[in-house]
Length: 312
Image 1 (cartoon, rainbow, N blue to C red):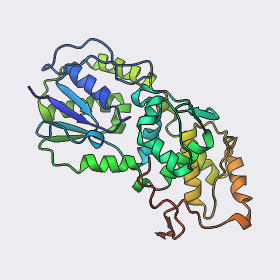
Image 2 (image 1 turned 90 degrees about the vertical axis):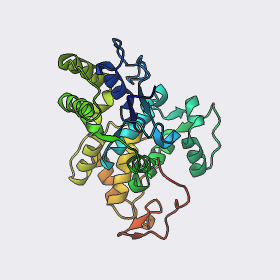
Image 3 (image 1 turned 45 degrees about the vertical axis):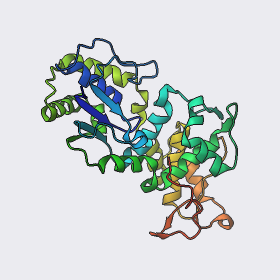
Image 4 (image 1 turned 60 degrees about the vertical axis):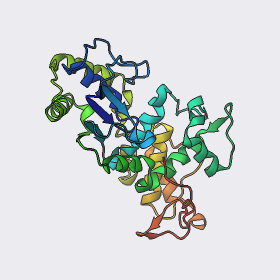
């Protein structure tokens, strides 16, 4: 017997949570009474029927292409937040991105990110090594400088460019609004005839718990607020994790010509500190930024990372 439905998604975009809800409310699957949440807030702890598949096609290729598929899609502007989700929740690894020296969990040594770090920074990483925070900040900054080359966007395009026989798209951001989540489930049910019997009150309770176990969603916009404060000469205290700092640094370098952000573990305390850094950046250090692939919409001849590959 095949699957009732397959959920194709990029890690961090809540495909396991969607699988739980479909499995729970479809009258074509056995009853499920447990909640799916782990201590880390992921939905990897759920019993499921085996009739609803959730997987990452960009990693393992397409499965069951003749069966119904739901694809979770998102906008380019969501990439930095999804990166934060991936690096705090993937494989249920909870990395503290605020430490000055960050230990790599064992799973990192199985990911291509380790190879990219070693290639970019010229250091062989052993299992007991710790990596300075400024290296990770720079690593993430580099990935955010050119989102068109970002690996997550490649993965999304791979998913959307398919020859599936029966497919339905849902929006990543709809997971954050209970009414939109309810409508998402109704749309899936209407498309594939899963005979869902959705208890709206119960769904709202599950959704509230989902959000409570996902504190990152309350900080989705704080990095952009810092960047906007820099542009508008407003003073805001900076409380950002290493990945967010990398995003802010990428926006600064893209917006202000010939500026490269510093590489130290210590970060700016306020948005005005960033503004002063830009204003007082020494003229004799100003040069074409080798991290940027283009300058004034033209290829940058000094671009250093042409052969590094897709960014993550």
